[in-house]
Image 1 (cartoon, rainbow, N blue to C red):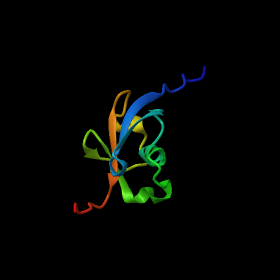
Image 2 (image 1 turned 30 degrees about the horizontal axis):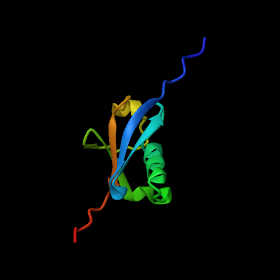
Image 3 (image 1 turned 120 degrees about the horizontal axis):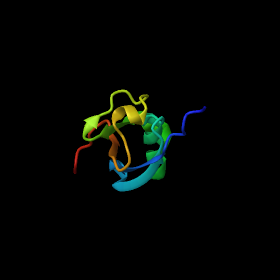
Image 4 (image 1 turned 180 degrees about the vertical axis):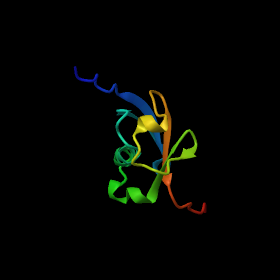
Length: 91
């Protein structure tokens, strides 16, 4: 008997540099790095520069982006923020 397929969840992702919010469908096995790359691409930011961005779930920095989203507590309706690692001065 094979295991049941993972049920996708819809998460709300805010990309701070673009001031945009996206709803993305994710699986529990997907990792934070993959979600970050998809969010950046949705905001029309080149995902090849993903190393310059960090992910926060529930306000907490995700230190190991290779962890599956389920292990980070991400479930249906969770809010995730993708923002620049370096703060920029406001002028």
